[in-house]
Amino acid sequence: MIYLFPVGRFFFTMALLGFSAIIFLNGDFPAEFYSPSHHIQGTTVLAWIMGIIFLTTAIALLTDRYSFTATLICSIMMGLLLVIPNSFKLIFNIYSPGTWVAWLESLCFCTITIVISSLSTVNKILATTKQNRFCKIVSLARHLFAIALIIFGIQHIIYAEFIATLVPSWIPLKTFFLQLVKAGFILTGLSIIFNIRSQVALTLLGTMFLVWILILHAPLVFKNPHNKAEWTSFFVALLMCGACFILTSRSCNEPA
Image 1: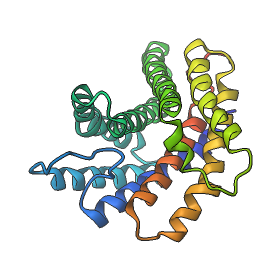
Image 2: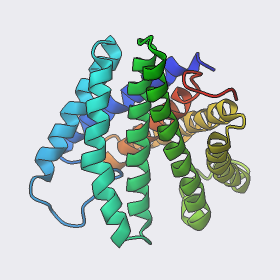
Image 3: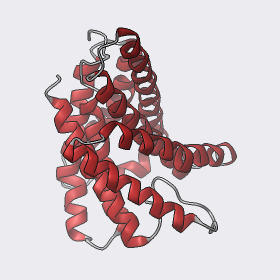
């Protein structure tokens, strides 16, 4: 499945460009990643810093120059500005679905950035000990991503009625597809954790995200071109699709 890695990396890069554009146009973080309940002084400045980092990382990935440094800085800043604050928010808002979504999506974003950074290093160094070190980092990031997928699946079960309202009415067998989405999240997460056909599971889940981009998110963006939330959802789906394809890489991957 290694041929999917460059496709996933490209999708991930396009998502970075999209998020940076959203930040620059609105002067704030995309709501799905970080939505403070009240105005916090300096949030706009931090958002612009993150936007610059997203843009710089995307350029580094497109030109394949300084990609390790750029993705490393991006993953660190994601952790400091998004994952850690969202973790504290989650502790005090444990029953808030929006807080869970912000935490899970920022966690996925951060872990995939770590994976790209580590894989770009593994492919360039020859020392086995150093390769093993970065492979362990990739393994940890994969497992964190898997945990996020499982929680996503559980959330789809808990909030099934609301999620059903997001599916276009023209799609047949709506109930079947909703059950398929839940199973896709949970089974893919388990396949990564237990290393059972993880590449196949990730390919199928990535394809599912791609289908939803084409039949759901893209039409909504086309109908509401000035809606920040629709654009954010579009790029989140693109990010998750790219993340799944990136994780199909055989580098630092046990045989599936």
